[in-house]
Length: 219
Image (cartoon, rainbow, N blue to C red):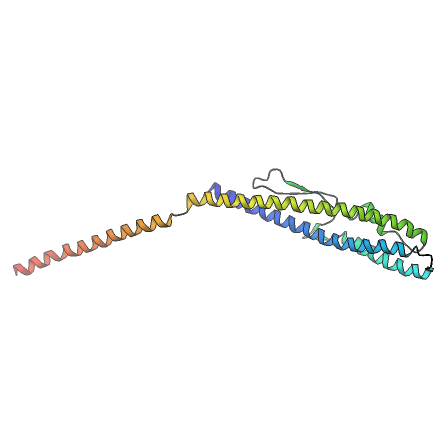
């Protein structure tokens, strides 16, 4: 019963880890798109500094830059089953059946100052574009660090999940030795007793027929 209970707790911990891994994978999926947006924003800051461009050209660049910035700001509000994907708060993930030593999944904050400074910038003038370029480069650097953090979280939880898989298999084997029937042995025992029952039945039938034979002779 203890082993069965422990196996159930291991299964629960595996489910928790699987969900947390999905959480990290979802994070990285969004961050991949943010990376593309920031790369384009970086390109736009340089284009806006072109001396052959006029104010109306820069206004068009700024329009696209602002649209991409709005997209990044929207991603920062996304959640996973009601839990915010992008917050500075760490999440403690169960990694063992007894609940000890949970893994602290480091948070990624897309609403941090590094990102919001870049998304709130404009490139409608050369001077603004120069400032925005530095801001976007800083955001890209921060994003690289954040994606590395997400990758580390996912890798660590995958190792923990693999460890639980091994533990689950070992517990199942131990439980099987205690609880499961030895089919070969029990089949042999069943055949033995079945033969004894059939033999006893035949002997009883023969014994019952002897008095009848005696009565026939006397009559």
